[in-house]
Image (tube, rainbow, N blue to C red; front, side, top):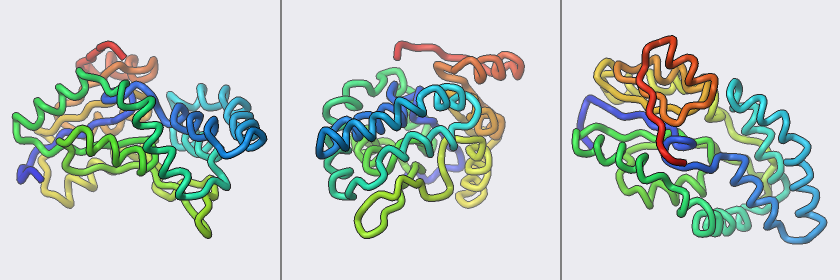
Length: 225
């Protein structure tokens, strides 16, 4: 881990990888054990799709809770297996080169790299291993009972406006100077995370974040996703 008082806080979805939590949940649902189970899980995602789209730019906590409800009743072993398949078949090819370059630049500047991800831990662990330059990360974790997913995410749920609180708490615990630290966000709820650092940047921002960045005078970076 870098021994530094400066950090780079990076939202995974939109900055480092194109697919988000809903894409992962859909892959897991589509690869459930039987046809009936697949239909039920995909049906749930289809039913919640309009709500997810509306919430995605304002309250990604609730949006993520809705997405992962589709995994209720799936075994922990099966989710681990599907995480590897999802990484190999979908996510690996959609990791964004420009996002990796941002992390490489942070490394060259000897900043601590901290990743925030909406995805669940088995998927994020594979991404972190692939990147090989992340010092710390926080992500969503599924609740399990008797080896089966309840469909609930364990608090705190990542993806909402609590990103700003996480950044300030992390900085306090690790003696990070936020005034000289960097944050890259892509979604409306990332506003408070960006506002917490001295060098914020909106990357491939949705409409809500783009408007906020324009009003705040923050730089905006767009690259191919």
